[in-house]
Image (spheres, rainbow, N blue to C red):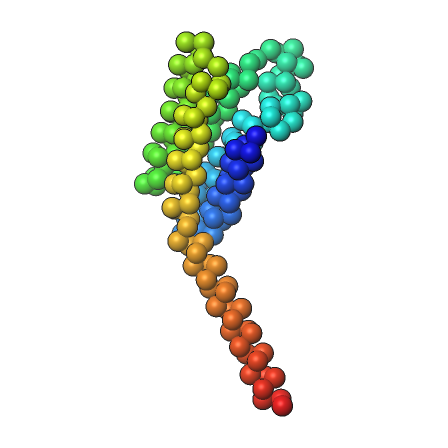
Length: 167
């Protein structure tokens, strides 16, 4: 369960880092939001089961397994990231991780594997996607943090000079 919350925190941080990108922010932020939403829908059976997609579909009379809903969510995420981010160098990294997860879902379905049998592959794919987003947005995020720190220090130094000149 801790890994679920750790991945959730990493997704939120990836969205925050992606929001700091200066050039072509929309595709990076879209990819980060898609990945975070994908994680949320994936982890919903552990966070709050009645809100999971499989549970909602079964309430509507369409029984679906959790793994089937994960596959559909991964496919939709793959299409969104593939279309919105297609012209950037980091796009193939993101959608190849989605292809890996879809392949693992297919292999698990064909061989009767349980989620715990292939969980590490899905975790590695998410870590690869998050690392890519941190690399793409990390430099601009660091610049923004350091710029705000410099301006804070300038304000603090300016207020110190005002106090010194007043006395």
